[in-house]
Amino acid sequence: MEIFGYRKLVAYQKAKEVVKRTYKLLKKFPAEERFAMCDQLRRASLSITSNIAEGVNRFL
Image 1 (cartoon, one colour):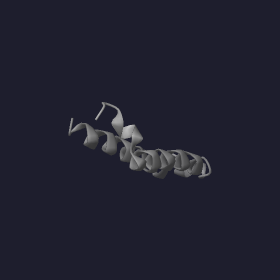
Image 2: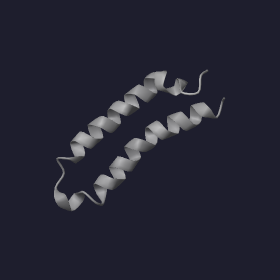
Image 3: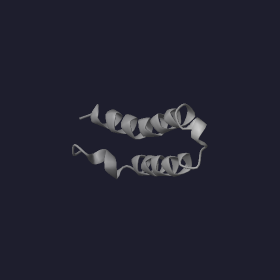
Image 4: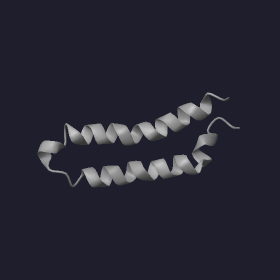
């Protein structure tokens, strides 16, 4: 498998879509939630793609 082969995985592609949708959704949150809950949701959605990439690279 090539170094960036994880980008071809369906799970990775769907996770990228989750990140995009999360960012769009978070723009609609009230200002008082932007620092606490929004930050946590943003980090959680990004960790999905990071974990997939890290997991695939462990087998190389």
